[in-house]
Image (cartoon, rainbow, N blue to C red):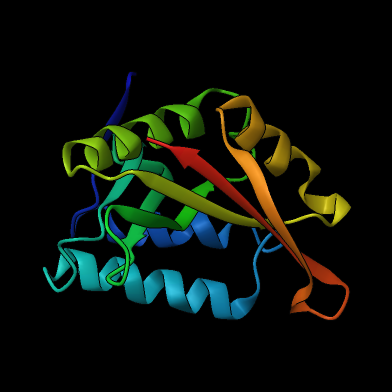
Length: 158
C-alpha cells in the first residue's frame, strides 16, 4: 500500500495523537498536551495559519508534522509538532512529511522555518535528520527544557 500525505483531518486526528504519543522518550507530557491541543484547534478551523499534515497508509497514521506562524514576524514559522511513529523511522516518511509542510509554507510566502530540539545525546538522530534536510543550528540555550536539557534551535530558509 502506498503512503499518502494529506492535511490533518477529523478522521486522522486520533492517529496523529497516537503517532506523537508513541515517542515518550523524545517528549515531555506537556509536549503531548500542547500537540493534542494544536491538532484539535487545526481540525476545528480555529488556526488556519498553522498547517498540519499526516502520513497515512490505509487507515493507519504513520506520522504528523505541523507549524505555527509567528504573528510578530513576517513569514516566520516554528515546527509545532513532528513525529513519525516508533519503529517507522528511516523509511523517508518524516522527510516527505516535512517536504509537504515546507511546500505549503512556501505557497504562503514563508521565509523561515525553525525547529527546536535538544543537544542532549538522546536526540543525536534528530539533529542529524535536521542537518540532512538542510537545517542549520543557529542557537543553543543551556537548561532550556529542564535543568541539563539544552535547546538546539535549527533554521531553514524557505
